Image (cartoon, rainbow, N blue to C red; front, top):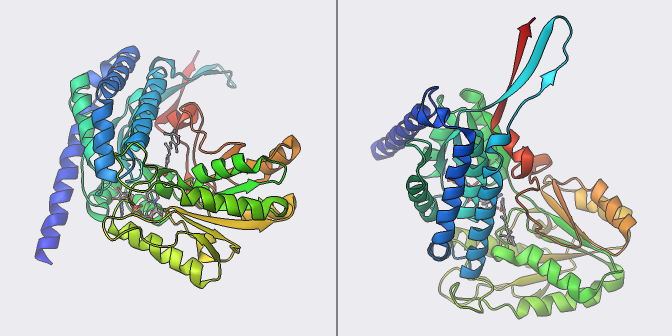
Length: 450
Ligand SMILES: NC(=O)c1ccc[n+]([C@@H]2O[C@H](COP(=O)([O-])OP(=O)(O)OC[C@H]3O[C@@H](n4cnc5c(N)ncnc54)[C@H](O)[C@@H]3O)[C@@H](O)[C@H]2O)c1
Ligand SMILES: CC1=C(/C=C/C(C)=C/C=C/C(C)=C\C=O)C(C)(C)CCC1
C-alpha cells in the first residue's frame, strides 16, 4: 500500500514538473508566445522534415514497439508528416472577424490558444496520434504535456528529441510516459492544464469526463471506440467489395477505432461474398512484422490477445458460423488467425462489442431501410461505409447513418484536411481539418466604444 502511494506521488510530481514547464513556456512574454505565427509554422515544418529524414528509424521503432508491420508503420510516418505540414500552413491564417453589433461599438473576435494542453494517446497508432495531437496544438500556439500509452512510449520520446532538435523553445512540448490511472489521471485532474485531448476507449473517456468535472472544467476532446458498419449492396463487383471490406476490418490487425467490423452484405451476393472473404482472410500472411510479405503481425500484448480470443469464443458459442481462423496462431507471440464469421446476428457479442482484433463479422440484409436501422443500432457512431453503384442509395445511407465519417466506395479515406470524430459515445469534438484546429482555440470578443 505504502509503495503504491509513493508511486502515485512520484507520477504527480512528474506531471507537476511537466505542467510547470508548459506553463512557463506559455507565459505572456515567453519566446513561444512572442514568436511570429510564421516562425511557429517553420518550426512545425522543420519537425516534419526531421521525421522525413529519420522515417526508416521511426517506422522500425514503431514496428518493434507495437507489432504493426514495418510497411504499415512507414505509411503511418508518411501520414503523420502530412498532418504536421498541413497544420504548419495554418499558423499565420488564424483570425477572428469584425461584427456589426448594436450601438456605437466596433466589435471584433480574436482567436487565442487555449493554453496548456494535456494529451493522452493509445497504443494502436503511437506515432500517428502524437502528430494528430501536436500539429493543431502547436499551430494555434498552445503548449503540451503528452502521455503516450504505457505499451508504446518509444516513438513519442524520439519525437520529443526531434522537437528539441527542430528548435522548439524549452517547455513547449513535454512527453511523460506513464500508466493511465496514475500519470493519465494526474493530467486529467491537474488545475494547471486548460484542455485535455484524449484518444482511447469509451470506458476511459467516461473517466476523463468525470475527472474534468471534479477538477477545473478543462476543455475536452475525446476520440473513442467504434463498431462501424460497412454496408455492401448487391450491385457491386464482389471481388472489389471483398478487398475493401478486408482493408476496412483487418488493417492494423483490426486494432483500429474505426475498423469496419460489422460487414452487412445484401442477400443477392451474400453467399459468394462470404466464400471469397473467407478465402481472402485465409491467404493473409501472418508473422514477422519486418518480413516483406507479412500483412499481419502480432496483437499488441497478452491482454489484447486474450480479449480477442475471448470474443472469438463468444462468437462460436452464440451460434455464428466460423468460416476461417478462430484460434491463436502458433504458440509464441500474440498472433491471431484472421477470422471470419458469417450468419452473425445483431445481438451477438461480436456484433456489439469493439473487438480490436482481426475478426470480421458478416451479417445478411435485404433492404436499404432495414440496414440503416440495423447499422444505427449501436451506442457508437465513429465511422461507416457503403459500397454501391447507385448514387441515390449511397446518399440516402450517408445522410441517415449516425456516424462522424462516411466512406462511399472506399474505407479509411483519411486525409489531413478532412475532419474526423465521433457521434454518440464515439467521442466529442473533431480532429484534422479546420475543425480540428478549433478544438485548441478560445474565442474572445472585444467591443470598442466609438
Ligand atoms: N479508440 C481508439 O483509438 C482506441 C485505442 C486503443 C484502444 N481502444 C479500445 O480500448 C480498449 C482498451 O485498450 P487500452 O487499455 O489501450 O485503452 P485505454 O483507453 O485504456 O488507454 C488509452 C490511453 O488512456 C490512458 N488511460 C487509461 N486509464 C486512464 C485513466 N483512468 N485516466 C487517464 N488516462 C488513462 C492509457 O494509459 C492510454 O494512454 C481496447 O480493447 C480497444 O477496444 C480504442
Ligand atoms: C488505416 C490507414 C491509415 C491511417 C489510419 C489512421 C491514422 C487511423 C487512425 C485511427 C484513430 C484516430 C483512432 C483509433 O484507432 C493510413 C492513412 C496511414 C494509410 C491507409 C490505411
